[in-house]
Length: 196
Image (tube, rainbow, N blue to C red):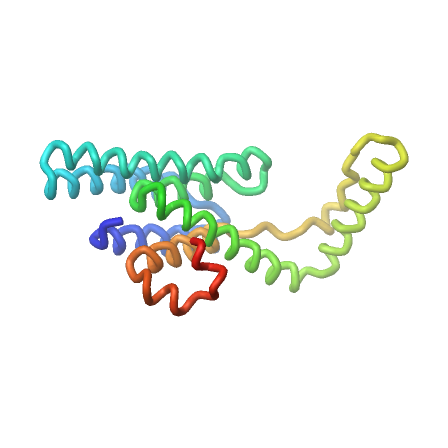
């Protein structure tokens, strides 16, 4: 990732966090222009440094990150674990970051999302217990009948929705820092994070 693109991507991520926390959605007016800006900026920077060949390299770099970011988040979206805005936000980040860094961003986002979810659940223990109880009943029915029929918890026992844009911004920020300052980040992060 070119360091020049860090500030615009950081601005997109901050706006995404603000809109996600306020309205629980990440709007198209933010993600689609960010996707185009990431692709155009990488192509332009490539052209600046390497002419037409550099422009193609920048374009492929950006499109590979866009495609990987989109693909990694598509499965959770299809499973209804996250919203379309989250998918488009990581795809837009990929357009800025390229495939290698967006993959790191996805890993960091997943870890940040897990910690975030545990933090939210700590404040909603009755709902968590009700959902886990429903899941236990479903598993018991599977053991007895051989069919898995999820018995949903009551509406007031549903788990709270997460604003996953927060986790995406944190994970992407960590991946950006890791790409920009590899030796400093390896000194700060635990040893298992060296594989990233």
